[in-house]
Image (cartoon, rainbow over all chains, first blue to last red; front, top):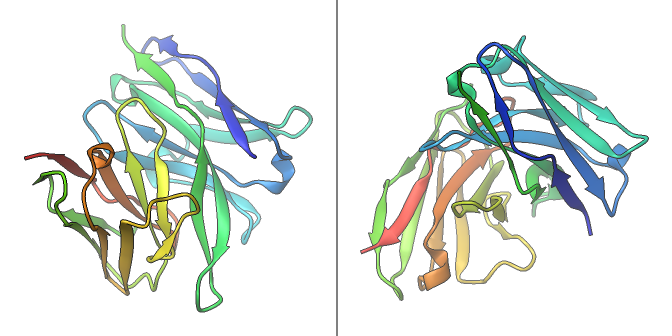
Amino acid sequence: QVQLVQSGAEVKKPGASVKVSCQVSGYSLTKLSIHWVRQAPGGGLEWMGGFDPADGKTFYAQKFQGRVTMTEDTSTDTAYMELTSLSSEDTAVYYCATADLRPDTRGYYISCMDVWGEGTTVAVSS
Amino acid sequence: DIQMTQSPSPLSASVGDRVTITCRASQSINRYLNWYQHKEGRAPKLLIYAASTLQSGVSSRFSGSGSGTEFSLTISSLQPEDFATYYCQQSYSHPRTFGQGTKVEVK
């Protein structure tokens, strides 16, 4: 049973950076694809990026290009999401999730996020 | 980027109602469509993947249908624990965009 445990809440000043961790238990991180999603207050779910095994690389949403870096430490089975140049608009709950490939009835493989961390609150305020 | 648009938003309903949420993609995504349930303060939960396949452990009162650009999520008989926000998400291409969400609230 895969479980994701995220790091604790953070309070940051505008212009600072934040690095959120997501520790995997019950499975090896090397066999998983980790994605990151956030939800700002009053807003919806927003996909930030994640590793796509079909392409062998990490994709980032255009909105975060140049500000976000997603990395992994396989020795500790921990994934990280670092976001730089923070502003108040980055105040949100950040989730990590595993993206699994599931076959559909026609033999295609569909990526879906099936296991989620509990979320990490990041508040950006001066 | 593929835009995902949900309707209605919000949706007012009562326990026992049959409710349907619609999700439209800005271009064809075949059946690369997932549905999630999200409750305040909790992690999102995968309900349906590949447009119509029920995730293991999810109640059979949830069902999904559609392909191409039009999809729907139906709850056959709304239960108290179903009041939440529901999101569709496409996995056809990057970025993996979500719909804006449909909050199912008490009528």
